[in-house]
Length: 145
Length: 366
Image (cartoon, rainbow over all chains, first blue to last red; front, side):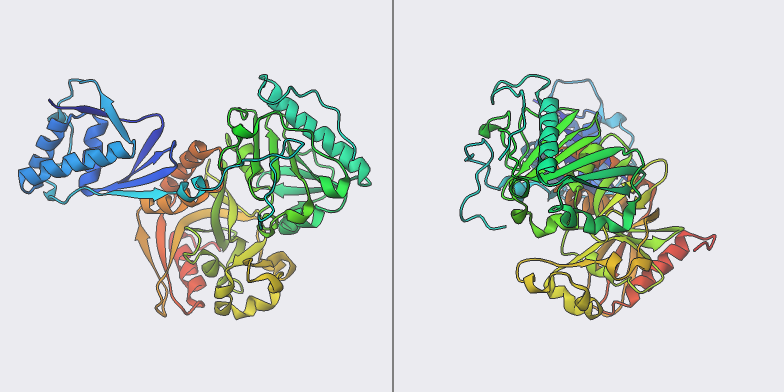
């Protein structure tokens, strides 16, 4: 059975810049860049395409082995879900063929999700555990500024 | 020590008015601290398009907070848009009352979970023991630390960074992790993560026709047209990079601490004529150190520029990520973006930027 997805708004926002989409997950502070085949898949997801529609449309848009394209789409959707950029959604009656995209976009390249993390190292910081008699965080003796 | 009177509920029993009451309590503590320390010291600064009044309890924190802003100082007397009160407990003998939140509410980044609202923003920066709190409706902020002795070196290079970020969150202004050089008719925003050549490229422009608005944090305006305002006159360089700019070595303010601090230069004290309060933004420039001799510039997509500018900005400016990203998205759509392939012959860098500005400004206005 084909699954439908939606972009995980409002915690995810995205913006199209010429040939690339930049998406931001505000829960994690991670930024993502999507180009080429990844951009096409994202645009189809924006329109509510199902996995079946995605594979079918990508196979018609790109030159390549249909099985490889199907596997590439599936792996990419898994990546998007892992990063919480998309979520399952009810079927919406969208026909991906109706989404306007140029007829033939060239040879198939597996889609790439470029990840830029601004928060990762900060989230590893040691949180405040102890407070002094006034209730303010207590500095550890070995803390060096 | 004296204690300010306050009516805060015990930790864990927060009322909707507790955040605003906390800011008022902190302000009352500041007033007591000022009395104990011999009075209030006031200094006023023009930051972007706003007047910001800094009030200090005694003298101790004044030099730490105003040195980087000295080029933007204005006479006292203007009605402030924002007032920031600074005090520390050690030099004033005035403690801050216990916080109305519990220790479990501190996040990893020092924000207070469940306490901040649209009006009040509070953080207690872990490890450096600095409390920032802002009541946006009152245009009032309080900066407190238990002791002035533990204020880290970098704080004096970008004072007010967090408070300005929260205060301006709903306005078309945004502190950004970027440098800026240019002419009065327009210039470039130079950005990218730390270590990509931002400061070196910017400092290479000292002595050229290009004026300097900042090398680490600047204030950008996104609407109605992109503009950059200087915030800090400081220049910061990794000690290892000083050898690339030998003419600046004698200007370093902390030469004895370069084993643990970046080299810090207060440029208004040495090159006041080269500082500018701001200019229109004509382009975004992302430097990349190539190791080759020559410098060149190539076009990049707005997405690449956004991914260079936004993560490095939101990394240290907490609590406003969505507003910040949306403003930066608007900015990168309004101006072209370029990669500065920075060579080892630093003299070529200002020439390349000047040539770019000439191309972007066909009217020839300098």
